[in-house]
Length: 219
Image (cartoon, rainbow, N blue to C red; front, side, top):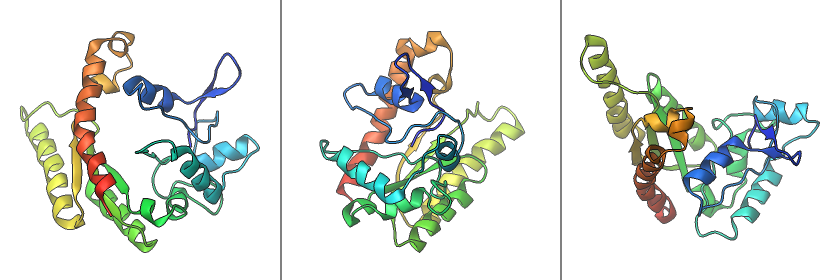
């Protein structure tokens, strides 16, 4: 599900995330199964468009869309409890998938203050629905320049302790750790069109490839 889409010249909605994914991996086609113009939560975007999202139907469409590919990576709209309608959330889509697919969940956690709580809550929510994460992907969301000051030294310690504590307490594998990529966060046209961005995507792919391999092997 993608909200915050813009209309193309043909009047159809264009998913900004799909555009980014297709730029990063042109040989791995990306698509959004539900697109909405309003930049808000899925349930509200659907309501504003006069439509609704059904978790079971979305899960069925997801399975059908994945049939032609050996590996399909699915990104939920928001977190596990992000609402799709007044009664269902992203978690309900995962729960509606066949058992073999429900075991291949990677929980992505931003490495910042609060990461430990977020990771443990996510794992507990999955457990309560009879689901299990195959592992965690821990992603750094901002730059830390180094221990040139007491605050920067503390920030570095916090981020490393997030990883260490989650590894100890989560009892699931950390599939990979994603560092901060300034090029991927830039909105500069020069960066977007440069080899710097392509290099960053290639480095990101190298980090994610083992995680995808682990997910496909997880049972």
